[in-house]
Length: 620
Image (tube, rainbow, N blue to C red; front, side, top):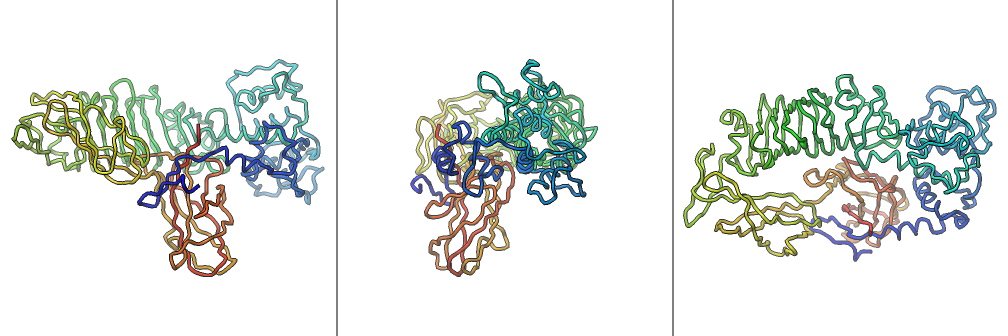
């Protein structure tokens, strides 16, 4: 496996090919002694839920996939799958459930959520659960609501009351039938509930992977897609009456807590229908992008780690107040007002948006770097530029009062700080790009050239690569972080263009500051080590298929064997020179995360760990 790893100078690894099917086969192969009795369609789900600790086998090593499931077993599975909380108050158990029963706690938890009856009635813990009853419980537990696209006849459902729930379960993909009939009155087998639960979990987690429409139910609950989700206290501050108009119908991608609460907003898109509204983020932190299609909007008190993108179809008017924004792109003509303490690290104005855009800087608002097709355009873009230029640190990555020297026919010409005096010859643009390690970058085939008459034209360019970098089909693939400077010969112009490619790693890792990855231990004693991982927002707001390589050395600098005891939420693999840990659910890294693992050494001493980021990609 080591031959698949490519070491970079910063100790970060890129695993270009990680065979998912091999891992899957290792997981499912003889997971239980009777696994060969399970249907092929259930094997992946059984393995998946076993990894999550939701469905497990019996003490004798069997799974009994064909065994019929009971109501008390369903209660236990619901608690595990949905992380239902313990009931803080003392609850009365149903008359047919003993307090000493293994299922008593789970039955209390589900009933405290209004599921599976109430304590005043018999629970029937050992009764078998039909497919119809099971799906009705799942739909009720998640608040699932379909759009009415699945319609069943009355003869398909024995209980008319549950008909809507069964139709919803079909619409969201929980129930797919056997091609002939739904067999709703048939008792549910253990292998079937593994498939149902897997589909339910995947459907619940869909807002983590793609944007979906938001509906506000009340101040503590929202609907995203088909399901109801509670919200954390942080997100709850957003669900005010004033914000409801903007948020209702917006699409968003989120992170979820283990009990399916909305924890963070990753990406948020404001639709074109939203106009003349004020949105108070209440110190909201968006870890990805904010995409604005609406108009006449005031957005305040929030920070954005990714990009703020104006992608509407018409000229837009936006006000940002007390906002902290990593990057902003004006892709349509925009009147942009920055006020209060707003700061923008990088503001890019697209060529098509330059003509009719206006930037207003008020109070203590600042722009660190403004990126435009032509530096000379900035005084016209920024209102009262002479009084506000001190609020702009850089233009196109350079100090605003320094014009690039241009050599044309042996003459060197410099511009004035205000930009009122034009150069004697054509000015070729300088390009700055940020790129991820080991991701192919297509070099531009044309660059922007400002002519002496003030017009801008696009010219063909042929690039020359820096040392040790190869250009193949006008594309480069760089495996080590660094800044690489390309020079380009522009058609018909002696002045050469420049391209600065800033190649960075997608993840920033930090071992806990208290021990810095150093463990002093005695034989047989386990230790817990933690580190944080977060995307580098300049190149990626989401890092898919993230894994980590853990390598240990002793005080003599020699590689040391270590026993990995526990990696909650991660699957571990011994790769010879260390351990590779991968998220069990393969979820993307979308914000700062803390990963903890437990290790044990067989010899006393002082050990240090090097933690390296790994990206694995599945074969197509």
